[in-house]
Each structure stands twice: as structure tokens, then as C-alpha cells.
Image 1 (cartoon, rainbow, N blue to C red):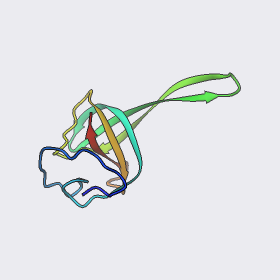
Image 2: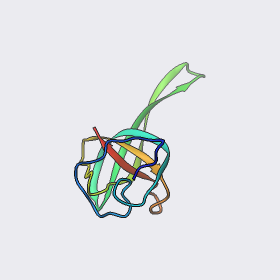
Image 3: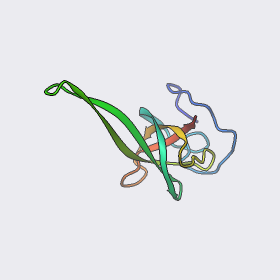
Length: 105
């Protein structure tokens, strides 16, 4: 179950993944980010692209930047390439994965 401080739509499908925030024991905390899935070729992992702007005072301009964040993709959510998703921070699941997909939009 998801912690009480954050509320997300629970998926319609059931899964038996222990690293699922809805049907397993994984708790989420920290940042919640919206982004677009750019790769879903790995097993239970997606790459989410986050776009943002940064202001450079010297030039008085904004720059458009992006990051690619690996996130755990539970079978009950099963996000595909091109979909908008919300990812939430969790404990480290591997060397690079510290986020989990919690909602598809």
C-alpha cells in the first residue's frame, strides 16, 4: 500500500511483484516527478525523460534541459514508450534505480 502522505490512483490490474508500491512492500518517499517514457526495452524497467528549464543569470536567458531517469515498472502498471507517467522516489532497487512508476496519465 502507498504511504498516507501521497495518494495515487491504484491500478486496475493485480500483480505479485514485491517491489510494487500498491501490491508489494515497497514504500515511496521524497520526490514525485512527471515525465515521458522513452524506452521500455528492459525487463520491469523504463527510462523516463524529464524536461525542465534553468535560468543562467549571466546571459539572462533560460535553457531547456532534460534528464533520463531509470524507474521500476511494476507489471500492474506496465508503462509503454511514449506514455506520460508519474514516478516516485523509493529505496535503491539496483545500482541506478531509485524511482518507481506509480501512475500512468
